[in-house]
Length: 428
Image (cartoon, rainbow, N blue to C red):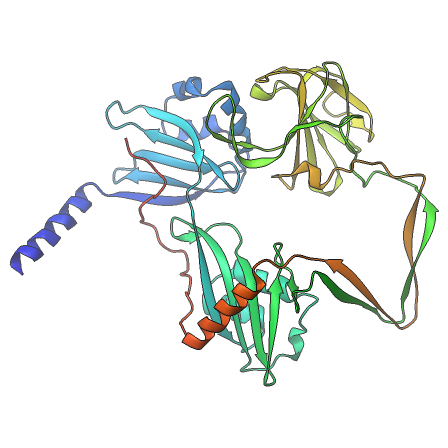
């Protein structure tokens, strides 16, 4: 027994001597990567080691983004992990032998686990889930699941809400939004299952065609074909003839670098000199060279959108200029890091990269459109839409087994942990 205690004491002393701590930080809005290095007393020579292909990702660090720093007890930075999207991150690491810092872009290591929970209704599902499980984002997803499906105003105190959800975690904390798979309400002596689609919206059955009702108070809706007054709210294509050569991906294997990199845009193949078109009306906020992107034009549009047109042979617009949808803003080229003439087209919404092909329209609208009008009468309209509920039977079985076992739900802490081991940080 004395020997075992001695071993424990030795382990405690070693951990104390070589302890490192992880701090959770927020990237300052407007801060550049160079400024970050200067604040940490890291020699700017590290910038010279960054390839032209990778240096463009420095501008994709989002203001307010959470990142992690691993420090020695004296405050010396050992490593920093800075996300550049949901799947990839910048790693700055200090080599033990030389004391020099290195730069790399690596996949983000996270765990993805399934959790079950039962919450007793005291006030409403949103408040009770937040209070019981200490997970505000999960409470928001419960609200989304019930919206248009369950009238939560009819729930009473003592009703039970059970559900299964999937959550990514990183450094022991929730990472991005959870995904609820299935839920069940026990109310008024009846059980009601709610199935979630891949976007987190709820349905009371697993049929592929789901019915939903649109109700109005003394209002009836009808449609009539009217001339188009404006196309400014519709996004068009950046080229007249579309040929996609590489799609949007948060984690793509780079054919040249032979490693994973984000591809925050869509590549369109075209001949050099092919005109590039503004996908929507807006203001030019950048027109110049941008590292690996070469000649670039960026346009800000309504609704929080910003479009990016890279690798141009020649730009035709200037900063501050207002452009119309379909206006020529430049020409296809191969400037920057490029294997041949093409357009790399990127699109952000509220500062986050999104898949452009979910917004762009392949076909332009005609001369007229169907427009909705309303008259004030009592009306109730049933509509249908196709949805896909994956693994519905399997999730229902899991939920019933969990409820039968009467297991205790996992309660998330208040995120006050300040010391932990970084699982995806390699030491040198």
